Length: 463
Image 1 (tube, one colour):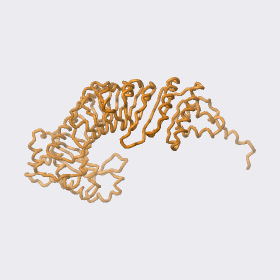
Image 2 (cartoon, one colour):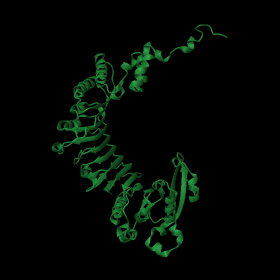
Image 3 (cartoon, helix red, strand yellow):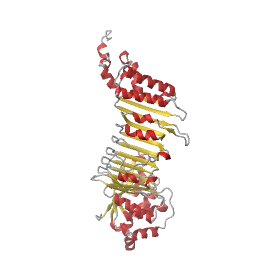
Image 4 (tube, one colour):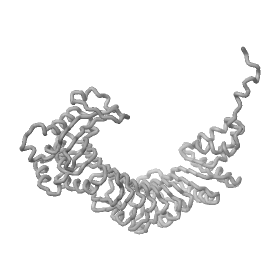
């Protein structure tokens, strides 16, 4: 039966397009700039809504290298909002510059002036220069002149004197990420005053220094990677709000001992080629530590330094990962006996999990040395080079020495006496429960990407 013409008109009414304009603008607020523009073809009522939504998000990546068109489009849209007195709550801008590009700075200065005049509440800026060997461009100092700036990512720039002095002007800056941003030697002593509004600070591949007594009262997350400058002055800073601290391959820690006063610490992470000297003052009852070390020189002094680090972090739940990619020959008996004779290593530290990535030539020495200073409740996920069965068997044989009843071994390897039970456990990715399996069963659980495996260890209650 055919429907009369217009019979289903009521079912095809575009009710969304009939909504008030301010509601349509709020809908577009949650779309990316690209998808917001696409709504202009839906109907006449949608044609210009995207040009009046309360947020703008521009990236030069969408202009396929046409920098002139990008600058023109951003400039025209901001001017339109200004001329028509439109509400602009958020402005996101991402742009990359070439070394020879000098057109951007005047535009940025003009846009920041417009943003200030329009009372923009949130300004997010990602700005970077293309890599030209050792040549770096100075970060336009006007970047730090906008009070509404909340999120800044700057890559591959030089900070000159005036830009450093203007950082404090960004009174609402919450997130600052600096990658390959350097300070010239003649301005290294210039004190950087960070805005007290700062909640997240991420610095990587940089020589930016930390000065004594810096005010980080609202900082919640601090991440430093490949930072060359000394970190000694972190000990003089107060971190009442800090929850996460991540230090990765920072040479500035080598000759330092730092003590972090962070009463609300939740998570500390460290990765590097040397063992740092670091301690925390915190009132947190439950916080986690993740330590990842490259053990290219696992001498007896290396184990003693590691023991000191674990002791300073013993109030946290510790996960320890040791990666020995370039093993050197070990005199196992010499190392084990030196650790055994060291009175400072008599009380092993509780460790939640131990991950040991090492070849067969040094696996035994590393494991026995680690057992002299810590008591892990699990070893794994079995990351012994490539999940080889023979390595798992090798580890199992070491752990099961306690079954031999050799009193001579018990005297020289005291961990055997403390180890009550060992089991090999497996679980599927995405599931919580672990279940015991036997070594002969291990080859049946492939592909390995679907499973996690570890040795579960139970120690005598002497810790």
